[in-house]
Length: 305
Image (cartoon, rainbow, N blue to C red):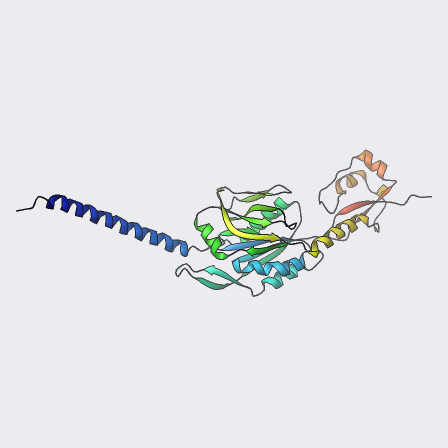
């Protein structure tokens, strides 16, 4: 004979069992998710554009390498210092940290690196070319990070990067403090590698990502004033003041050739001159070649007595 109170008690017991079983399954799923997050491997490609910034590269690049799986540098062909050598020295034999897929622990790895020279046609095209080069050389890289030589990480950890990457967001924005110490920027220059990603605009460039979905990355970076910047500005002004030329008078240059070859070294943009202007310039200007790799310029001839 069954006691009346046993029926509801039994029903309650079965509900309790089902609840406990569901909770256990959720716990297993959560543990699996945590394990997957812990073993998420981020292979970061650190990418640099460099021009006459050897000392900045030597000072700051080693601070970024512990985060890097590989490092790629695009060295402007107008560079006259040893920036390329500084990059190779800073990355020579440098260790990097890569998350092991199985154990979920950090293991040492050898840093992969590559450097090349390029012709400057704007920051957007330069960064896009750098991204393409890194993807071609190191297709196993999962994320890219654009770093300026004058950036110094105040707080930038691999743990924060892995946590942000585990969210599935494709663009990770971090804070960069300007060198004036008063203003700052939020830049999405850490992002998932994608064959369709590129950087647009010649100046004030902007990242374009096919699956753009941004999240904050808990990094703090500061921009540092360096002596290299001042020397670069002075050298650019000196280029315009040079007046020693080795080629023929402009009057001996055909108008068609002169119209297609008049160029200025800093902007690297071809400035076309009409035949009428060529006729006016022919008596007052001489055409000459700047030392390689700068372009052709015109400089004024001293007036004849």
